[in-house]
Image (cartoon, rainbow, N blue to C red; front, top):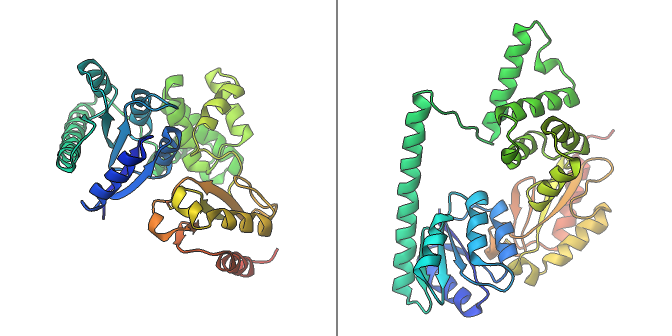
Length: 333
Ligand code: FES
């Protein structure tokens, strides 16, 4: 599978050069002149390499690196600078960048820098995994993950505890009760540490598919924070949804390639047919719509996914046919 690269730079020449150079190196390259758009793209797509400009009008590249270290820790980040200095380069490395390259660069220079950054990132990850593996084996450390496995093991642990205490199994609980137990278990898993709030929200979101007002309220009460603080933090990240997703979820890309190819008409078509906007769910709970920054398949623009199946070169008539087909196949109430 092709490696993915994201390039964030307000200089169109740099963007088009990087795209040309790295596409011929076999990368899937996504470019954006807007750092905030770049930071939101990484929430939906994993990039092996991220090149980011050092200085941009909207956001300092140093802050971009710092945020990428949290939201895309596995990516090899390389900074591009017109005026490199040892002090800033050191600071960038401390914040998570793997290397930097000075403008103007030749194709050979930037290719070599990127390859070295990837190797450095891989060896850094191997040594971290080995070190943590040794500590975990020695029982000196335990580290939570946020994927479905954590939810599964939490469910099992709660079930076991309930059995021990002669209470009914988690399986016997209603969905709200079950979610309540999961939320409490997640909070305990993170030792009630409010600095791990994002991890807790991700774990709960991964289980429930969204963060309801009730869930936010429960987390707030348990952590001694206000609901406003929790919502303020969660709403900063596009990955969190606050309304229960529909049984069938439509994601419509509004990234540059899809927008140019007519993505906005697709969004309007879906909205008109379903009578909901992005982030909303139909009253019957069957469909929800989400607008995304890039689905990672720009060559198929305009692209849409329905229940994780990708539909490229989409047009309004085809989209309506797919929606109507799902409606026809849904069991009637
Ligand atoms: S812009 Fe990349 S898939 Fe739409």
